[in-house]
Image 1: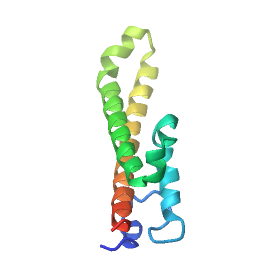
Image 2 (image 1 turned 90 degrees about the horizontal axis):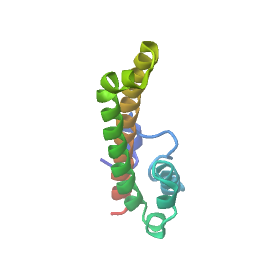
Image 3 (image 1 turned 90 degrees about the vertical axis):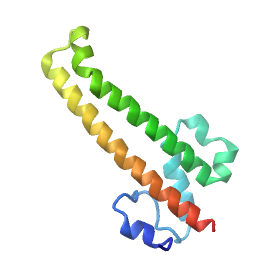
Amino acid sequence: MTVTSTRLSSPDWPCQVKTPGSYDWERSAAKWLRELVPARYASYPAFIRHPVLLARHAQIQVEHEIRVARTALQTARADLPRLGLHEGVIEHTIKLYAAEVMQLQHIARSVRAVTRALLESGR
């Protein structure tokens, strides 16, 4: 697979990132990846100089967020009533957590696609 085909063949390619091989695409990838990590990490010189390192950290960050959202989802029905929340609020919160897990899974796939393209462009 060529670098330029990554975005065209992947529904997970983030719309904020330019097509691999196009002018300034790596800068757009790094900008998008920086939005996924805590601000202090995004400013580390190693992450600025090496977008693939930033991509690795973004993947770890998103995987951690998926675990947190899954835990919140799995424990909501037992924990939230003890907080005195109305059943409607609890149901809404469960749906919110489920949607968040799905969104984070999509972001994780997008990070993997960008990482692959960054690795291919470095060859």
